[in-house]
Image (cartoon, rainbow, N blue to C red):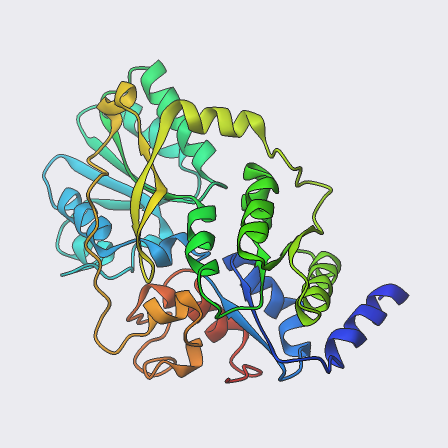
Length: 353
């Protein structure tokens, strides 16, 4: 380890300032903080909370219900990322719908689903388009391709969300002293939206990368400024995150999608936080608007964990009734969910509040 990294790690390990509650908003950050050992390095005065940075975790129950309806409809086939299969719906998950004879399959790359639809014109393919700004440009280009090639047997059910409105909602409370902002999202949006939030709410925010050295710099910066009660945005991922973001990706998103209210698990309906297919591409929309119903199984703390109001270990189901093999809530399903990550990487050293 380079000398300066050793010094940063020593600072974090020996931090003796005021107690801090810091939130990482990205599920990849949650995993990387465990994987690099930085979470385990922090003293008890620093509590790390995991925010709503897992798109599968914040997707409402109604979205799963609509997908299972399509899966059980003759002539339809639902295609999704693998971690969506076990997310509980009101009555069943997609995996359970498949067990009942429904047509469900998963993809690693959404582009492959278009090729399958072209090869199978007698089947209506429903693609579950889930994600934040990181994946929204990919979905936009797929909608454009479907329109350009006139692929009529494919539709997109979208649960695409944008991160700044969620941070806007979280910043309105005094639960956290600072935020580690999502690096992948910021590559697309740029740093400007986070700078405006930091200024408006007088919060400490740091954009960080994902390698150990990048995370170490970002966490040290966040602890330093939050511990001194400084506010503003610091971009510690400036090699790839520019103030204006990726303009080409933004252009693709703007052409295909328009903003509207969307329901987030734990946060409720947030104005302007959803991305919906525009009317000119409406022939490829599977009915994405109005999917607002959300239900959390009784006793499950997913909605509180997403807000940072509870840690995974504080849920009575964690590691008992709820495991990655038999998940009760969405936070245990996805590889980016804080409960799944804590179970997978943090059980031995997980520190309860």
